[in-house]
Length: 100
Picture 1 (cartoon, rainbow, N blue to C red):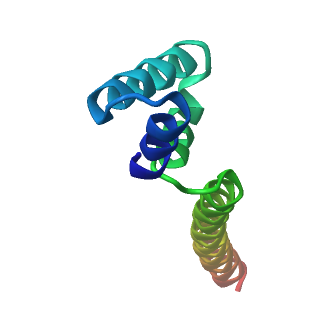
Picture 2: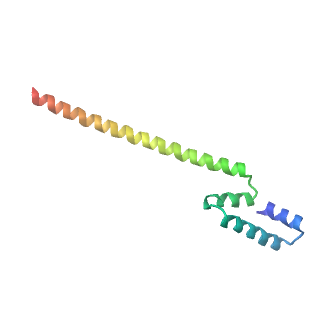
């Protein structure tokens, strides 16, 4: 918030404490009027991060989560297919041995 607070101080000609209060008021207003999903973005932007970088980071995190869940899902499917094939083989073996 230092960068934004400095801008407020310079542009409004007010003290650091006043700028801090103004910044807090504006951030709280924006959070009250926006979905909670973007509150972290607002905080990061107030801290000096660019929205583009904040969103890129979020997208990267989501993509990593999707990748991990996809790998886990396919492993589970593979394990289930192996188990089903093994059970089917056992049943076929049992069936053919009873016929003999």
